[in-house]
Length: 154
DNA sequence: GCCAACGTTGGC
DNA sequence: GCCAACGTTGGC
Image 1: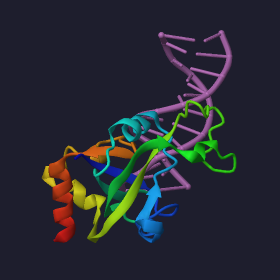
Image 2: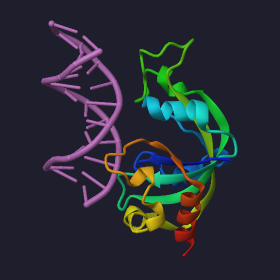
Image 3: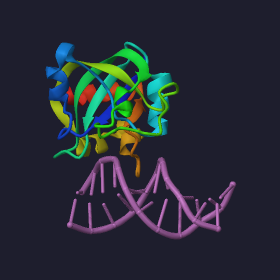
């Protein structure tokens, strides 16, 4: 089982939105970066654990846990001309963008803000904390995942 | 294939 | 709102 971090801007889709969704599950649509796409399409597996991170929030923070409940399949929003993530250049027979289904597991007992992540020595190698790192889908080491959950439980 | 211009991300 | 860093686009 692998571990991941998914970024979302809570002003457009928050962990609470995921929690309130039918079966607490949603298709993680709208990812339009090839590196992230490859992770979604090829690497994320059913049962993998996911940290949900609120970016462009005050403060930016890890706020919840989720799990992958369906592996990569074509993101339907790429074919919807009315959707913000419509991609006219993506052929239906060979879709460019993929999504997984993610199910909320629990809201963390306490949000862990990025300032606190930066202060934890065991997290110093986390992709999220590296300068210029913008990837919205990131692998997380099991030890990092555990350290963040521990911080949230303090 | 290079690379300048442009657009986006996202913390601060 | 600023702006550094990065990804994408498109002319050549």
